[in-house]
Amino acid sequence: MSSTFSAHYISLTENSVRFLRNRFPYKEITSAQIHRVELTKGTDLKRPVSAIVFGVCFVLLGAYLIVNFSVWSLNDIERARDAKTFGYFLILQLFLVAFGSYAIYAAAPIHPVARFTLVSGGSESLSINDIIKEKRLRDFLICLKKAAGSNKVFVNRGADLAV
Image (tube, rainbow, N blue to C red; front, side):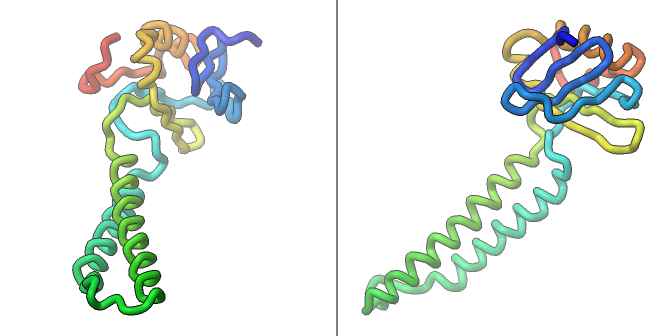
């Protein structure tokens, strides 16, 4: 079956939607499995609230370690072992803050997504930022209405999508 629309992460056919990784399909959803498709602003993470919570915890832990345990000065480091321990501890602190910041950044709803709600109750989210940059949103929407059914596709007007 040939695809009617293809992008980097998605391929649409007459009666199915295929999610792609490296241009190879890893999941196919038929029209009967789709309950609703919404084009909106959001995140493509499955659990963004969990990512924000873990990110805040890592940043707070890193800040706590920096404030309370980084009291060594260069005069306190007498042996090479102390310097090595200080270096590892500094790397740990920076890693915690950087990883927590990235988790918060990744979960922030800052880009356009297509959110597929399935009949089984599950959902899939897919970033459509590349499709918008390539100015192919209108073609994507037409093919999506063919693949999923025109009564199942909704465009959130507050998402600032130029259709």
